[in-house]
Image (cartoon, rainbow, N blue to C red; front, side):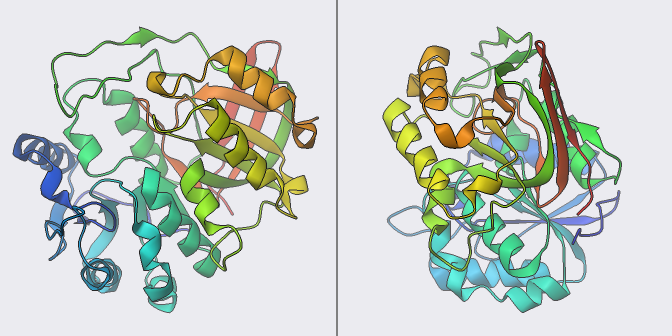
Length: 326
């Protein structure tokens, strides 16, 4: 099930289901509001978006209140998470999934928000969007690719491609907006060739694994598995996190694997990644593409979880087409 796509004049509600918005700098918030307003959207904030405790989050009740209010408010057409964090999975058993099913809306974010996105998709069938947080729109330089992909995903129904960006950056831009380093990117890394069609399932890998064995974990049958992780990941943790997914009973139904570019501080080199992937018999015979624009390295694409996609990797050329259909 797809929510109605966003249009100029629509209201976007910003909520903080993980870390509180209080940690964001005023200048970053102002720029993010300006960017979204220039696109024609009206930006509003949840009542508890800046509430926080000693863990720089807020209570389950406060976060659930803002989530439910955003879905229940008929004026709100889209919902953006403020930022990621660590604890969004605390909310899953308190979410009113019937409310969401009756009021489908564009819901976008990434990283820790993966837990809520996959739970919503699993419980309601609503396609959710792994893409920018509200805070992402506060990036001063290098946002064009991210913005274009976001609009491709949430404002029209046409198929679109996840092509390699011309450059990428792993800077802590939120600490220093001007001191940025961009690296040229000529293409994605093909680990195994092939062609596949399937349903996009995935997000932040370590967050996704929190759902194993619960009622909130989507099936991997016929999945285009799209995964990424942040700088806290390293080769051994990535290896075991991926292996854990591959032990799931329906993992044999994975049709393709897409891996987001790792942050440099993870120290996962291309050689290490190849060694990890090639050692897994479960992944033989499916197309595998790495270093894609997805996750914690900027810029990144918006990927609709639950949508159909086609993946091709052959003779150094890649094609990732989001079909925008169930």
